Length: 402
Ligand code: 13P
Ligand code: SF4
Image (cartoon, rainbow, N blue to C red; front, top):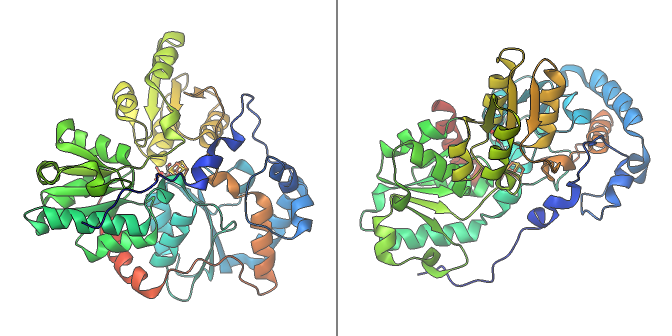
């Protein structure tokens, strides 16, 4: 057995998660220097960018984008700030953005306004000539940070050592994981999934085996498996800080789904009480949540799906409908602004952006674009050849399963 008792460690991205939580609604960007005053540890950049006002940054980005023309494509995830997403040529959830990245053969530079694992994926799916840039290198994801490569390798080795039929175990990782984890899946007959195709990815896996190791979000894994008819007592949680994940060999042998002990600090803030409260205040409310929410929250909601699914459901709904939404606040606020004929609000009254998505301040976008104008590629994301090879296999499986 290679897994050992370890001191539980909390990723810095998780510790910083509440840095921008507030009770008033104003999430408008300030200068980066002012935002740094809260004590966050983001990538350093030249002082002139720190002091530039958001309005001036906006003008600068617009000009740089115009000059770079077809050489540049900007991809933006729905959780980005308004001051950043306005410049995205394509917006979407992780699945859609991966498709865009794979299709953009012309652009020399792909600037990814999202988080690190998304930019890595774009690098893996794009051509070797293209350069993928993440404006702020510290824009990671606390959930992804909860599955460290060595811990996952230990887990994989231990489970395979104790179960009787090795070929029956299929590793599946949520997109929200490092390329090294995707590579492990690609190398071992596994697959990557996103919140929009997790259902289909489970079908894919059960056509090939009868047991899934699901990384790193226990909630997406549990919610999806339950929908597929797997009982809660057939699922166990692997604790990376305990030998054998905290289980006996017999328990590991019997489990149908082994869920990594990871979660999203943004989505686990939503509660059943918040849903009940929303239903009491608005009698005809629709509750829609992301599948990274807990099992109880997902079961209490009316609808559940990826950010693109949430957006589509609300945009396509009739005028006058009411929506309580369980996902990241920048996206919920934007949906409310863009659909003034509907009532749209976040389930959580405390305004808590995803603190790592929020690290893409317009100052960083302006900085990397100015670099490109001067012929300097700042913050390129480059996945090494071996990791790239196997993670691409797992990602191509993901793209083929809908
Ligand atoms: P989507 O794929 O639904 O956009 O989710 C990405 C994410 O990080 C949600 O927290
Ligand atoms: Fe990661 Fe959660 Fe932020 Fe998504 S919302 S990027 S899962 S921390």
